[in-house]
Amino acid sequence: MTLRITKKFEFSASHQLSGLAEGHQCGRLHGHNYVIELELSADRTELTRTGFVRDYGELASFKAWLDRTLDHRHLNDLVDDNPTAENLAVWLYERWSKEFPELTSVRISETPKTWAEYRP
Image (tube, rainbow, N blue to C red; front, side, top):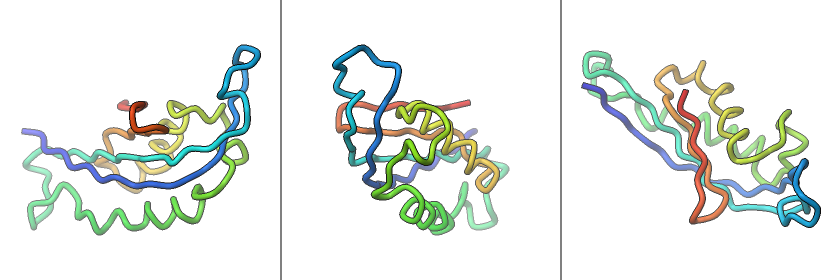
């Protein structure tokens, strides 16, 4: 039996996407109030002694990094690929899956109605 936990984080940042059709709104410099959801999973036999997939408090290092590294920044200066929500989800997963081996997906929202998810 697999158990999953999810925690939501928020930050604000700007970006400008390249490679779009002339006049596409996302080709202009703009910003979003991003929402990130980290999902961590473990088999029931892999839970901690206290019965957690991982203690939510241990995700504080991610929040501190997010605030220090991405909040109120220009994502084009930080992400190697075009900073779409999709590429940002991959970028975050690759940076944090080593620290949180239970990490199974990263979801990114740029607007209340849109989500991109990376689930390797």
